Amino acid sequence: MSSNRLSSLNDSLVSPAEIVETLGLDPVETASVAARYPFSITRHYFDLIESRNDPVWLQCIPDMQELSDSHQAEDPLNETGLSPVPGLIHRYPDRVVLLVSNVCAVYCRFCMRKRRVGCCSSDSLSPDSFSDAVSYIRANPSIRDVILSGGDPLLLEDEQLEDILSSLRAIPHIEIIRIGTRIPATLPARITPGLTGILRRYHPVYVNTHFNHPKEINPASRKAAALLADAGIPLGNQTVLLKGVNDDPTVMKELLRGLLSMRIKPYYLHQMDLVKGTAHFRTKVRTGLKIMESLRGHVSGLAVPYYVIDLPEGKGKVPLLPGQEIPSDGVLKLRTYTGEIVEYKDI
Ligand SMILES: *Cc1c(COP(=O)(O)O)cnc(C)c1O
Ligand code: SF4
Image 1 (cartoon, rainbow, N blue to C red):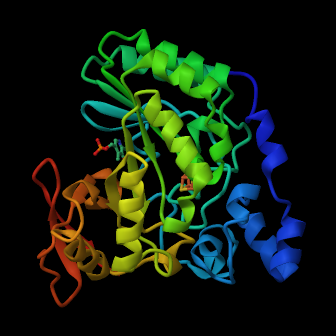
Image 2 (image 1 turned 135 degrees about the vertical axis):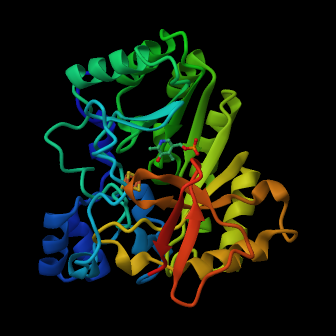
């Protein structure tokens, strides 16, 4: 785990200067946002932009609104507090998230890990932290499911990824390994037969992709998904509900149907977390519920994701169902998986 980010990534990035020039951005503003939060865009993703403030633009182009948002917290889900060893989040009894990479191909402006991706001294988890994490998992037989996340795990070199997968597979109580990645949408050329050949050696491996808009579904991302599916990898998807991007029933239906056509089963639709620098993307819970109501019965049941709120302080994800009552003061009472009733203010 010593080498750094995928060597081929650098060749596929668009420079900040080119973006400022091509899109007619204010160079000073763009630089000031990029100085505060990480910035990176792949050629593939950049080329999907068709017009100013379109859904691809909004997701990847730095915006001054990121700097004006002061009331939200950097780590509302308390991921740092739930971390028994660096890089590992242990919130639920039987599963852990292992943050193996600190980099992404495209930095999403709405990212919930804005506080930590793209700004660490190293691009991946250090060898010491990785072996501490493996020791922790080995010592906890209640852990059955390891979710590789980051950053983007698929930005590790093939050999690094293989080291991680083989270390985890060597632990008898690990049943499944999941990989959360946005690479099929942002850098689809990274999904190669060489990579899928590695992944399939460690089955059962599940891949959870992250598509937010139908524009992200195109021949290149279809090919990436097909390679993964043909390697016998069950594919799921998480979508973040984003104002101006996909907070519309027609757009959402097109996205979900498109995913199914790529053999990707929509898994979660996330209400935006209350993360600093992302408030301009937040929609009301009511908007999400309206979208959910528009799906049931109107699209294949397979296309319907769970609409979830990830509760503050790491209390877990709670699904919201159509018909969920929203009190006039905007304070929802939600039941956590442990049965605790938690108040959640829909701001
Ligand atoms: C979302 C999440 C999981 C996985 O939850 P599932 O509902 O099993 O997909 C595990 N740990 C953490 C910290 C999470 O945020
Ligand atoms: S790919 Fe995921 S971790 Fe990376 S910037 Fe986007 S939302 Fe954040």
